[in-house]
Image (cartoon, helix red, strand yellow):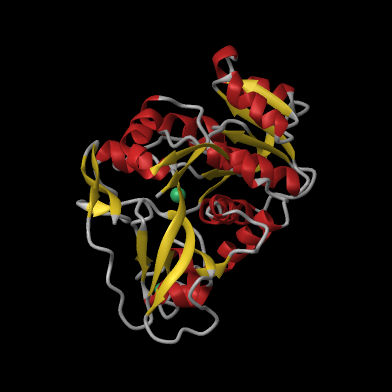
Length: 342
Ligand SMILES: [Zn+2]
Ligand SMILES: [Zn+2]
């Protein structure tokens, strides 16, 4: 089969390799669509990811496809089924799993290898995070369930409510999913981005106010103008830069909540004004990854059209173009997702 193998920093080759062998309880999926993700671009740029992947390895983690082989009888699934498989599964046994914090599991099992014609799905993921794709949902659209589940985790943990004013900083695919979910839950959305191309998309998605950072000298002041002088109830940082994390805190009203959603480069730090945190009772949250329940909820939202899947995929490329696609995503901002078709 053909597969995209990451060898290190910006080192990637689409090459021929044996189809993975499966064991009892595992399944083999013929990948029909794999989606690019900001995490993949980061991994491509840095050459590794502390938690998710150690090269050389086939990479990619958002996928949908058909079951072509099963290791023994597996309840609920048959050869030929259209499925999505999440990129991880929790153990279900540890301290965190027992406290509904499966995303923080002591032994989260990751699976990579979506940029390939075939992928092996480990037994634990088969048991916990393999789902049928509803008939009317396309493969590439169903594959959005994984990133959307992460966004749902961020949304739910932040306890935003209908009528809240919500600032969303960063309008890549994740920021745009936050715009979509915040609107679906009845929030007033202030979308904050650098490029008008992204801001216009946010408007299409229903954002109520658009703020272009290139044209705004004092962002906190602009946000206060848009919120009767208060600041927003909730801010989501979906950029992943320490300076944006620090800025996000300054957009809040008293008692507001910020979610530092965008992961920053490792060993970076931020500094926050203690007086603001204390006297304004600011709450800082961060969210990582997803849980099995949220993968299911995400697929439901895609299936029912609450999240318009088509909106998030604006390019389709064959697997053989993977290197070019990664290079392009690395050097150009403002893209949504590319569907890679092996
Ligand atoms: Zn992803
Ligand atoms: Zn666990």
